[in-house]
Length: 481
Ligand code: NAD
Image (cartoon, rainbow, N blue to C red; front, side):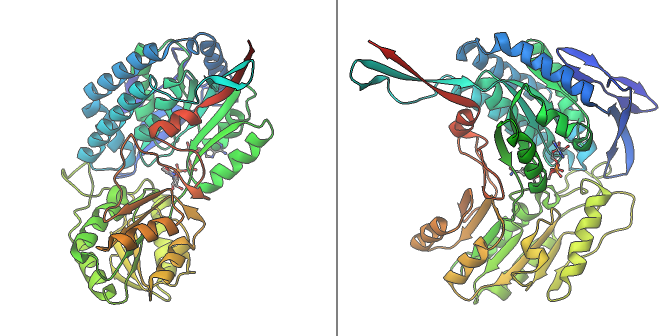
C-alpha cells in the first residue's frame, strides 16, 4: 500500500478493493502543520478516479444491499475491534497531519470505534409503523431501504472520527460509500482503508484523496451518487446543495457553528470557566461545537472574564512532535492561523484582548489561546466562525437579551446554559435555536444521541437512530387482500 521515499510516505487511493494511483499520475503533498514539513504524498484524484470509484460502489451495491442487518452488524463489530487494535498507530498518524497532541488524537480512535459498535447494534433494531389495514381489504407496510451510493465528504478537524460518523450509518443500512477526506488530512482514511478492505467486499467502501476544487463537483454531480453526506463549511454545503438540486439528491449537511454559552449570575463561575477552558480550546478551537462565545450575566461578567483568563493562561500548548501531554497543538495550516490573526486584529477595535492575541513566528501554524472581552453583538468576531483558539465574552442585561444574542447568528449547531435554576435552564433550552443544548456542560457527545444543526448549520443528524433514518428511504408497500 505505501512505500517510504526520503522519509515521505507515498499513499495510494482505494478503489474497488484495489490500491491505485490517480489516473493523471499527479500527487498532492500533505504537511505536518506543527512543523510545516511535508510528511506524505497522496494521489491528486481527478474526475476519472471519481467515475471509477462511483462505478465500483454501484457494482458493490447490487449485492451489498441484500445482506442482512445481522451480516452488516457483525462486520461493523469486527471493524470496531480492528480500529481499537490500530488506535495507537492511527492516532499518531492523525496527529502527524493535524498538529494535534498525540495522546488526544489517539483518544479519538476509541470514540470512532464506539460509533461503529453503536451502529452495529442499531442496524438490527430499526423500528417503524405497524403493518395494518389502514384501508379495509388492504394491508400496508413500511420498508426502509438503503439509498444507494453515498458520497461521504469529510473535513480536516477530526478526519477519521468524521469519516466514522458517515461510514457507520451508511454501511449499517446497506449503502455503499465513496469517502473523500479533506486533502489536508487524507492519511488516516487511506491507512484505515486497508482494514475496511479486509472486512468489507470490494467496492463497498472506496477512498479518494483529491481536493474539493478538483473532484467535488464531479463527485456530487455524478448521476450514480444518490446521497451526499458532507461535514464542512457552510459555503461548501451551499455549493453542494446547488449541484445536488439538479438531480434531487438526498443531502446530509453538517456545516458551520458558532456556539453560545450563556452564563447566568447564579451559575458556578469557576466550574463554567473550567469547562470553557476545555470546550473552547480543544483541538485549538477548530471545532464546529467549540464554546466560542460566552454571554455572561451582568453581575458575574467581570468575575467570569477573570476566571476564564486564569484558566486560559494555564493551557499547555506547543509543538506535539516535541512535547508530550499538551492541551493544544498547532492549527491545521498557516492559512488558518492567518485567518485567526486577521479576525482577532479586526476585533481589537471595540473589544479588549485580555489574554493571547499573538501569532508566534513559524515554523508551524500556531496561535496563542485568546480571550476577547466586550465585543459588539454585530461584530465579525461574534457573528462568524473563527475556528481557532479564541473565545469572546459579552455582558448581557437580562434573560431576554441573552436569548436574543444567542439566537442572533446564522448558525444553530450547539449551545450551552450555565445556571443553578432548573426552571430557567429548561426555559432557555426551549428558546434557543440550536441542535444541541448542554446544561452546566459543553461539548460531550454520545453515540446514542443525535448531533446536527438548525439554520445554516445544516440538516441531517449524525449518531443515534436518526442517522440510520437519514441513510434510508421509506417505501410504502400496499397489498390488496
Ligand atoms: P471545507 O468545507 O473546506 O471542506 C470539507 C470537505 O468538503 C473537504 O473534504 C473538502 O475537500 C470538501 N469540499 C470542498 N469543496 C467542495 C466542493 N465544491 N464539492 C465537494 N466537496 C468539497 O471544511 P473544512 O475547512 O475541512 O472544515 C471546517 C468546517 O467544517 C467548519 O466550517 C466547521 O464548522 C465544519 N464542521 C462542521 C461539523 C458539524 O458537525 N456540523 C463538524 C466538523 C466541522
